[in-house]
Each structure stands twice: as C-alpha cells, then as structure tokens.
Amino acid sequence: MHILCATDLSAEAKGAADVAAALAAKLNIPLRLVYCTEPFIAVGDGMVVPVDDTHVREQLAAETGRIRSTGVDVVFELCHGSPPTEVAASARDPATALLVLGPVTAGLMARFIAGSVAKQTAEKAIVPTLIV
View (cartoon, rainbow, N blue to C red):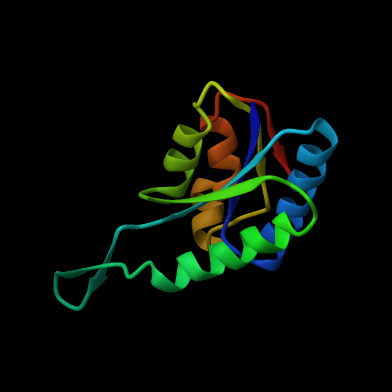
C-alpha cells in the first residue's frame, strides 16, 4: 500500500507533497511522487521535438530528497502524456490507497472551458483523492 502524489514541482504542489508525506508517515506507508509531461513539443510549422527530461528528473530527485529527509520512504516516477489521464492511470495500481493533488490548474481560459487539471484527474481516478 502507498500514497500517490502528483506534482508539477510548483510551490503549491510542494505543499501537497508535504501533506502526502505527513499522511504517509502517519500511516507508515511509502509515498510515490509522480510528474507527468507531454512527450513532444510542437515548434513552428508542424515540427515536433521530443522533450528533454534531464532538468525535470533533477528537480524530481531534489524534491524526493527533500521529502526523504523527513523520514518518509519516497520514490518518483516521470510519465509522458496528458497529466489527468496518466496520473489517474498511475493511481489504478491496486496498492494505491490515496491520490493527493495540489491545486494544479491550466490557464484561466482553459480552466474555464475544461476545469482544473486537479479536478479532471480526481474525476478520472478510481481511488480516494485529496486536493490540497
């Protein structure tokens, strides 16, 4: 059993990770930190370039180290695709007890049209979800 916490490495997401870590410590279970990004970036007239994950992996390793320093067993994973879909898919692992999300939102217009990323993820998730 573990807690899954999605992050975009923002200050708000770090707050959600702190809540997830506190819950994991209280329940004495591990924490999985997941970051999801699009696999490609469109540039110019139809040119598509793969995303370089190096910087994100370094930031995830640093965030994992920050959380691990509190005594919580934590690992990170990087996934590619639509964040609401991929995070909800990660939460389908039968060992996931809880999904914790920060108030990750798209831009104002996108949020108005489609709702926040956290809301979309929570609607797709099949496990209890806490939006911090």
